[in-house]
Length: 293
Ligand SMILES: C[S@@+](CC[C@H](N)C(=O)[O-])C[C@H]1O[C@@H](n2cnc3c(N)ncnc32)[C@H](O)[C@@H]1O
Image (tube, rainbow, N blue to C red):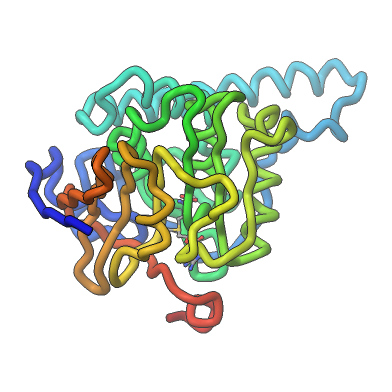
């Protein structure tokens, strides 16, 4: 196979991180990712989303409306901040990040779900910072057109899988693969409360338990592959499952990591460039992750 490497210009901020802040981008307030492992949703949102709470109580209905509006407003403000600092540069990315409320995917107990920082989700994993989600959506947007197939490896909370599903639509397919079964259940719960719930129900969005280093051959080839954890090297099965014309975004490295953009050309050759320096949790075995790497 023909492999060529080339470099791109560095993105607007010098170093973006998914799990730990090396050098925060301008949108980061404080790196106050909570290390407490809480799995409850924020009260306001779970009240609003949980059909079990739908009662005839009119005071409750007023509260629902208030809570929902405030969450949406804060999510929109987060998107606007990312636009202001040039992290979100397209209306497509802005639209999907506005549609998928980040608070539904961040464990409650996290002081600020809309802060630009990663948040611990248990099992030595995190939901990535909003600027990393935006960066990856930006890099993959041309490969997330309606009808296309997208694979999200290390899907964690399911946030990006939900974004992918909304972008590729009901005629497309968005597949999440996560090796911690409890996180698969968490992602499904989160997605069911989100704007992507219908796509999950209809089957164009699915989340599976498995070793992401093997990809998910059932729905291959993929137009877009996102890997949410850092691999020591690019797993061959993921390259094999990329469609000619397809693009993969994957952090590669151990202590020092680069976000790589891997394009499969129409003749099957591979071009790889480095987008920026990042810091993600490792793409590893379940056992290594549970014992803390
Ligand atoms: C930084 S988290 C990203 C989560 C997701 N992008 C999000 O923002 O919610 C990385 C995820 O990769 C998962 N992971 C690590 N190694 C894996 C593997 N071999 N197969 C599947 N998932 C893996 C972790 O469990 C974790 O949920």
